[in-house]
Image (tube, rainbow, N blue to C red; front, top):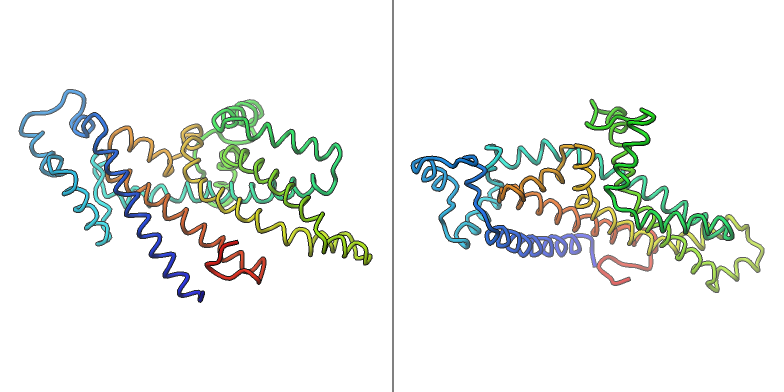
Length: 316
């Protein structure tokens, strides 16, 4: 499959997924108990004139299917709608918070890739007590909830030792990395542990392959064998898991952003769901879906660089 055909296929699949996802989310929000009027007019409500004005402004009395297709039409025109709670365009809300989530997820992805691959490879090659230590730490990391890790990191490194700030995103550059380091670590612990286990298994499996045994008998350097024959072939499952992990980090950032009081897309999604802010929930969910599809497309492209025998669009 050519690259252009692959891109068109991915775009078509993305549009279909977005359509189904938006319909399901919009329907579930529409069926949820309660009314957005309570968050717009306050707990005491409003006068009949105010209720009528707000209802007309946000089309709250329109049937579900009418509201859905009206929103869909605005989406194709590049209009994500207005937030009924924040009283501003949804696109402005997303733009103001996307930077925080992007930086957090990017830093967590780097930590996951470096720690997971290095720990798993080291455990597989060294074996013995090193393998046992890495496996034990990975099991602990997988079984510990994200919010527990976050609270523990804040208590130890932020409050106790004072090495890191407890909240905020900094002023940019290295200061932002410094502020987001603890949240990124909390977000990456479970994923790095899982990737370490996958890497360990993949490397151990590749070491038993016939071509690796042949290279060993021929007297090739152990480092060359590991780099060229073991790690390169083990990268296929490692890349798959890493891609899926990164794609789900935005959803996982919800807990971390709330623990560390960060104004990102995750915390925005939680508030929007609680307040039944339809337009904001729809927009954030669409961002999550787009991110997931794009990351998986990038992973498919990486397959062709790791193993030239794999072509775009083929099943591994």
